[in-house]
Length: 256
Image (cartoon, rainbow, N blue to C red; front, side):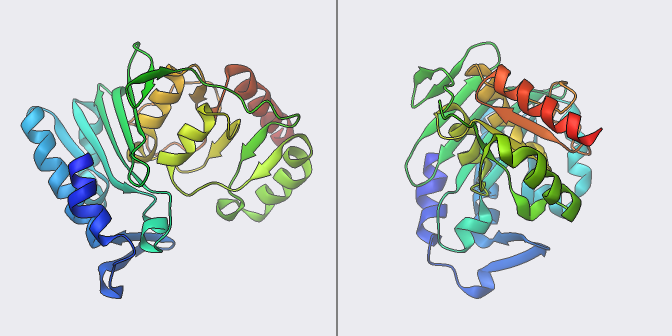
């Protein structure tokens, strides 16, 4: 991950030609660096474990059948998480890799490309930053800090957040980068965040890492996230189980 960052990603940061930024879909960009980084990461991961399939974000976009491998043994790769930021020459952005088996994330790694912060976790073995074990810590603010992106909500959902959530939380914008958002939830910067899209390359590693740190990330019904249930929507991550439960209870009460 560090080699690909230094050799492929950072040389193109703030150095992309217009033709090297492509619209995959509405508000969804890909750059030449994403594609080159994914190829390099896939080649290296195949040398580590050739028996596990590789599910890369860009490869899956080109061929959705690649997603079928998520129910078996696989590597899950987000070559540049936060591509929108990267393409616009601003932080944060990072590289995310997860290792899953039977739909369950077993290991996860998140590298912040600019700071070098390296988050890692293995199922049942705790969470680490740069090799040091960490424990999730709430912000301690009078109102819990909630990272909620209003831009991805429907008009009705925006009204609901404004009327029913905002009075009880300090609402802040998301960084448009899961590689940054999950660390914020454990490091005392944010207390809770809700996610609408829950694709495995964005979330598998971060969910494992946050849960191993003592926070909580789960579906709205409390069920565990699986990498092979990408069709589902809705996910909440929080700095502690208590904050998760309070936020979810409030959102569910307001929806009923």
